[in-house]
Length: 132
Length: 192
Image (cartoon, rainbow over all chains, first blue to last red; front, top):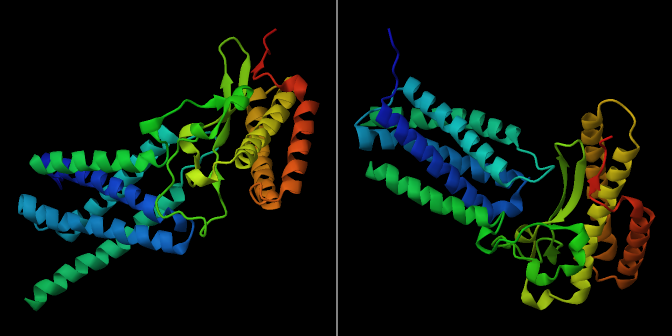
């Protein structure tokens, strides 16, 4: 028995959205970099990262008419986090100089925080449904 | 499909824009090794200053990016070079481009070269077995020492504004480099 969570089209859509989100976070970093290393920077990135990830829920609805259940949604969030990290690492490999370090810890923390915040956002969609 | 194309192309444009603030590839100049430091002028500082970065926020008037590169050649020799990266270095504004500031920034490059020569000296005098491990360890130690020296240089000279300190640092660094003149060549011949 095969457990197929997403179709090929959905996977491609997730890949493209993750790439686009990575570039949004990067351009945002250019403008708020002055806070880099501070809590404000981290919170700003977390906010944008989480919102972009949560938009996947609506993208699936609009593009594929699919209402994500929690399993699919969390898998989506985890894929989003992994892809962002992969893109960020690829970017780092392209522009790095000797003694530059990739901040795996930063992306790992973003990944974990996003799962938590993403779950909270998902709860909100359930509450809204019940209110209706 | 249209969604994918639109967001992919938008992503590429955003990425190229943000990447230009890390390395200005629109006005790219190749890295300059230390042996050519006298040819460097402010016109070589082609990097892009990040938006919103003002003098009031950070204590910098210009930014110079230098690094040390170690290349292991196929014949057993090693090349250890200090580089200045024009596309990653910038000046805050045109009015600041004066000779004193340029001199100050170039002596940041001298600091990189000093620690590079120290590394070359260590490599040439190393008699142990695992040379690459030794080089990696020493390079890391000298990187941290260099970072500390670069910071002290900026603090004590206040970016060239304290002329007395600036002159003292320049004299000290020149003496340090002269004392390591035997290790000024980037190419280390190690093959027997």
